[in-house]
Image (cartoon, helix red, strand yellow):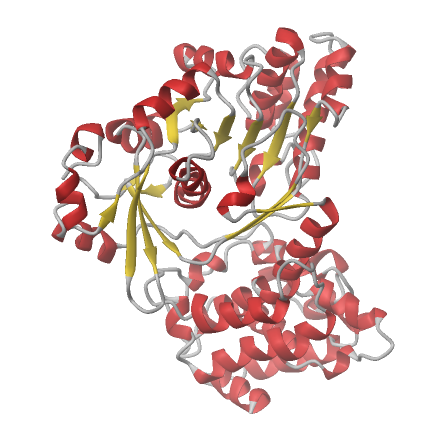
Length: 528
C-alpha cells in the first residue's frame, strides 16, 4: 500500500490493515480549497500534521466544512519535496495509547503545500495569490517561539530581520517579515479582514505575533516602503486579529517501532528523513491520544466550526488561564523536573522514569501538593483531572518515545515561568509559606547539578543546548557564583532568597554534588 491518491483506491487493503480512510471527497475538497481558500498554516511539522490538520479532517468527515488547509513551510528540499508532495500531502496518523494499542488514520485535510521562501519565485507567487483572496479567514502558525523573535539575546535586531527591514517587503527572508509582506499584498488587494493565529506553545503567543508583525510594518513605514495606512490596518483588531491560544499535545519524532509496525501491515515508504534544517520527520506522525487546543474566539472574517472538533473557543482571559494552568502547574514543571533528573539518572525515555518511585513521587509532589494550592483554574478544564491524566496516562505512555534530553533543552528560558510563577503565588498568599516547599527546590537544585555535565555515577553526560549554558556553568565554578545565580530574578523570575528558598536550594545543590549516588540519596531523603 502506498500513501497517495492512487494507493487509497485499494480501500479493502487499508481496511484490512485497520487504517481508517478519510470520509470526505478529497478531490472535491482540494478543488474547493483552490477556489476559496480559508485557512493557511505556516509550519508543516508534526504538531500541525498530527493534531491541527486532524482537527480539520474531523470537520471534513462530519461534513461541517468543505475546504482544507494550505500548508506553508520554508523547507522546500526536505518537508515539501520529500514528505508532502510525494505523498500527495497525505499523512498517516498513528495515535499511541498508554495501553499499547494504536489507532491509525489517513489525514487528507492538507489541500496543498507551498514553500514560503521568497527566492523560489514560483512558490512565492503561488502563496501571494492565496493571501489576496477575500475568502481567507485564518493564517495560523506552528513555527516555535523562536519564529516570532525579531531580536537576539543581546536585544539587537537579528541580521535577517534588519536586512529585510532595510530592503523592503518584496523579497523577505525572516518568518515575520514574510507574513508582513503577504499581509501587505492582502491590504493592497482590498484590505480584507483575517485572523493571524499563533498555535505555538508559548505564553501570550498572539501578543508576541502581533508585536513582531507590527514592528516590521512600522519599520517599512519609517523607511518609506509602505504607507502608514497599512500599519493602521494591521493594528486594527476588528480587521486583523491576533487571537491567543493554548496548545498541548505531544507529537514526538517518528518511532522506529511504529515504522516497523506500518511496514508489517504493508504500508510502503514510511522511513523518516532528517532534513538539511535538522528536522526529523516521516510520512507518518506518531502522537499521544490526549490533545488540547484553546483559542480566543476573535475572527473578523469568520472561521471553521472548530468547537465541533473539540477545540475550546473562548475569550482571551480563559485562554490565558488555561495556558497558565498548564505551564506553571499541571504539566510543564513536571516535565522539567523529569528531564533534568532523568538525565542525571541515565534515563532516555520519560515514560521509563514514571516506573521509578522516586521520580514519580517528585512530580506528584510538585503537581498535587505544591502546585494545586496556587493553580489557576480556567473553568473549562479541571486542573486536578488534568494532572491525573498527565501522571496516570500521558507521562507513563511507553509508546511515546520522548526523551528527557530533548525536554532539558533551553531550561534557563523555562524556569522563570515553570517554577518562578508558583513562587510568586506563594509569596502573595498570606496562608502559604514558600519555605515549606520541598519538590520545587529539589527540581531547581537538580537542574543546577545537571549543568555540571556528570551523571549520578560520575560519568560524563551531555548537557542539552541552552542560551545561558556557558554563563551558568562558569558561575557554578566561581566562588560565590551560586549565590549570584540563585539571586538572579532574570533566571528564576524571582530572587530565590527573597522567595524564601535560596538557602534551601544551596543546601540541596551541595548534597546533590556530594559524590557518586548522591542524586538518588537526596531524592529518597527528601521525598520519603
